[in-house]
Image (cartoon, rainbow, N blue to C red):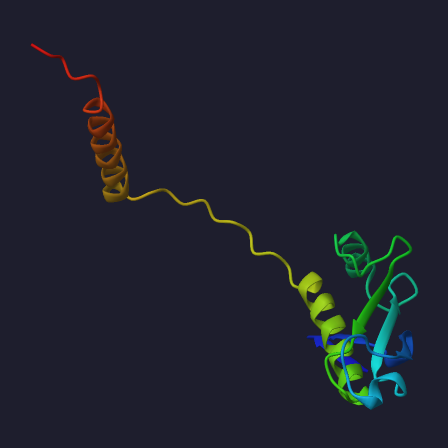
Length: 138
């Protein structure tokens, strides 16, 4: 069980890991060892609450497929365990970002001083533009 927040947990049995060979430059080891990790998480078949499932599926993220499967690839480290831990942490961060409710926006008004500064700036700019006009000759 992975702790997401408060009383929300992610079951480890719902995660599927596939070990693959990492891309990019490397030494002799790179072509022999599968150190990169593909983490697959089926959102619709998970034990998450329905509102979080819907929010995850609605994300405009390339890691979320149309079928509601999240695929995270981790290949930053040379160790399989570290890549696996990083993939899990990235998934948890994704779920946390959706689980945290947005704060409602509080309408504010500009201060009187900021309104004055704005008007003064506009007047000054208008004066500069007015002075750019043609110069009348004698």
